[in-house]
Length: 472
Picture (spheres, rainbow, N blue to C red):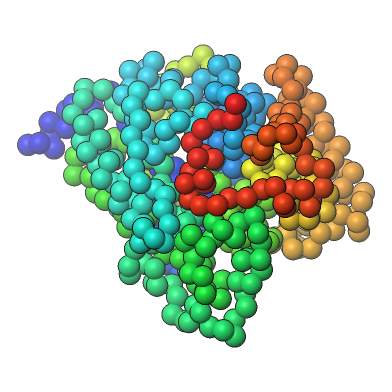
């Protein structure tokens, strides 16, 4: 009887939209994306009932620009947002998805993303405990989120309006402190083996050392143990997300809800000396998962190739929900890939980062060009070039060997920049980020030594503040 009433109430209105935004989630560490360890059994089942996109990119990392593109359907030339510590509010020249949906009669709630410029426009904001240290014990981040989200879904369901709910999960974001038994689910060795020295360079990296010591064991020697903690956090979150799916099904609204799983960016584990963070515009940071379930309009179990980006999500969701708009987006409708009308939505990606390093570059299916805009604290070369077909993990810098390819990609990148500057009438924001690092008296770093000696993160509270407010 209750289910019949639910179906009657939802039959003639727009579908609900649930966006599960998972911070720092590596698609390559999800079993549905081919990871050999079973980290995401529930999301795997979810993917079998929807569409999984194999080549989705967050070209502009980290969190703030990533979500700004994801929630507006616009690129960085339109959002003018490229830095984690974005200066001021998000520009009024762009309209966010919650603003669009509120105007279309939706209730809108955001869980876990209060205060960030990219989260503008929700009617209601809720928070939960998603940060901590080893002194707090293991962190049940996803459970804490559920304790807030499940009652909110119940409340939204009782309304006579459709809802847009965004859940920002933090489990794959450091600190990696999954509860038992997930903490050792993927590790069966001795994490403090004195013969293992793989953690030596991690603790030798002074800008992050103090932060690492707030949540890593001080005598841990095996980097695979830390990676297993990341995998355990993903698996724990996966189990908790199933509670969300179960609730939607119990309420009779699962099939009347467009459910999206996406990530703002990937993660660097033991990659490129960017230890257990998400800086460096390598593919482990740029590639993200994207899975959409909506059986009324999407096929089940489809895997879609073809490059696409965060900016493509908003026009896709509005199309699936049947919501007309006069807004023009920089992104395209992903249904072009789903329906086979296009093989890709991008032949080249303009990539940027502005968290711990300020760089930009150009990525094609074959090549990756990275150009530093100022010296970085890893003492990396100014120009990096990678052959993605022969070296997909980007370990061999070919910039000196193939200077002709560097110049060819640089011309493509500059042509793209010029085109977007003319289209928007605005400057390229990555070139105008003085003081992006938040240190007074320093505009841009003049040497890697200066960057190394200046940049520092001390504890999880400091890390949380970086993401929850703009710089002035």
